[in-house]
Length: 210
Image 1 (cartoon, rainbow, N blue to C red):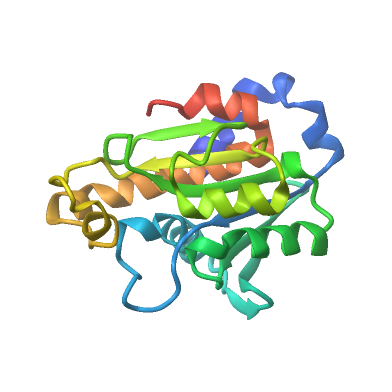
Image 2: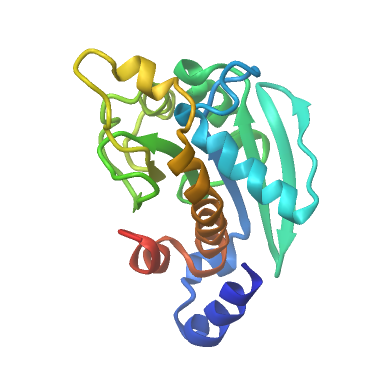
């Protein structure tokens, strides 16, 4: 990951977005459901991305109001990582609270979620859009009263038979997915750092479709 960051500074220093230089605090939200029953499910990829990053950097989540929270500082940026404890369908309440608590502007919010419409491990970063039928995004949209917030969609594919969507989303990764997941989680960590260091536009250009 640090090789990526050195590359980022070397090749994109001149194109760092001015708003990121002015406003240096970011809220990174990983969506998921609390409890061991959901820990290794596809729907919990948001939690898993943040847990992977935290483990690599020696960060510890603390249970606070509406979620588990930890902080990471790097090159003058402060990243606030949030895993809502509200369950997926009420994620918006936690996002709204922590944006206000940390005084973070909407443009510095990144929400990490699963996406059935993308192949496994595919990355799609957007600055706005519909909830796509995702209940977590639906609640965030309702609480923030806007569809214009950054989201990082992690593909989990749609490899399920008719009528089995819920079982698939709340099911655990298969062996093939598990073997590929570490590399995809490493790439996801790079997305988070790029968002804070290079801005959303550069991050979309660098990672979408990869």
